[in-house]
Length: 201
Image 1 (cartoon, one colour):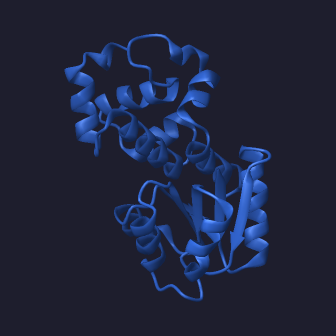
Image 2 (image 1 turned 180 degrees about the vertical axis):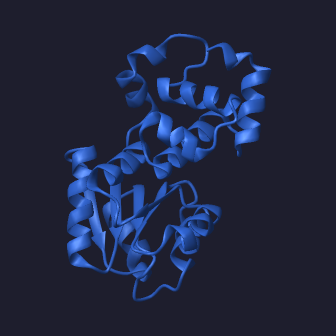
Image 3 (image 1 turned 120 degrees about the vertical axis):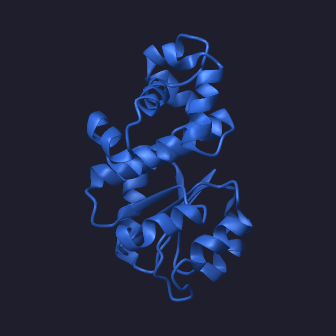
């Protein structure tokens, strides 16, 4: 499995490569400088486990990179890592199918935390959260926390403050939770939890 870092700036490609290696040492990482060569490079280097995509590439405009990658690889997690403003682009990126929006101005630890939620498997996360293996839900400790916080009506910002993580990381945690439950929204996740009697977990 391979991570593809798509950015036209060599220094940023190198920096992201180092950060990804801090999440999962030894992972194969392929740097790409523009979008129109992605398909041929993926064919040569193997199945993508994650795309890290800059919005500002020589052959993209605005959201086009997100749209192209999600059309070709709908099941591959996509992290937008960009200098573009979150206030302007984050919602649009997530609606277009991106799984995380990471500003390059974030601290290395914030970027690592966001990447980790996309690169560490549910099984590994559950193993790390030993306390999360009990009970009927087969959810990680973090996912159980999210369900309880959903029930409390907390916003992403409030959840981020309580867990001492970034809002970006909260959104990625929700993406993984929704995928595990087979739902598409906070409302559906909460309904699923109530229907299955999980709110006592």
